[in-house]
Length: 265
Image (cartoon, rainbow, N blue to C red; front, side, top):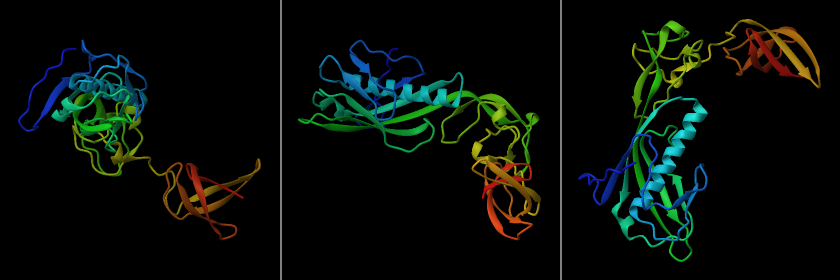
């Protein structure tokens, strides 16, 4: 890919590059990708002095691989990545780095979109250095959107959602498959056309406060059951308070099914 370089007036002493998710190449780049994890290193195997262009290329490749890992783990499918990168002009004066470059994130963003910070450092004992690189990125991919208004505390069904290609440039999470949202309950109203954010959905309660429940107690392979009354609502996997109807004792138990909880002796 050919880099498009240009000076931007709002970023003094910086250069910018753009990528649309394609492989980045450079005729002068002689770097080896060693690992694809946070804090990964890239070695200059030729021992030459790193130029600004090589630093930009290394960071861009690192970022593309970071996004690819995120896409794989979250099963995004096909996506388009667009990003601008700004490297300080002072990078032109950095001394040669004989040790591998280390690239680490300087933010705690959950998604690789929006304004991001990356640190590029050289750990040479003789002349260590570090610079900060800014990335502004967006993702274009099919995400789940509401087809109609869905009220608060309403269970999402197939007719409520559809996949639609959108560009994501903010730290707002999303779903990429209808099955991820269907059956969940809204914690706030969804507007028609709105990207469905996982933070606005939760598993519906399997137990409501005041319900009579089956309490299953177990230990060392033995189990027994009794009846109780739920003292609070609970979704699957949540721990709730339950009053044992036989003893009157209040226990903590984990919701395992519809009006069913599990505890240990």
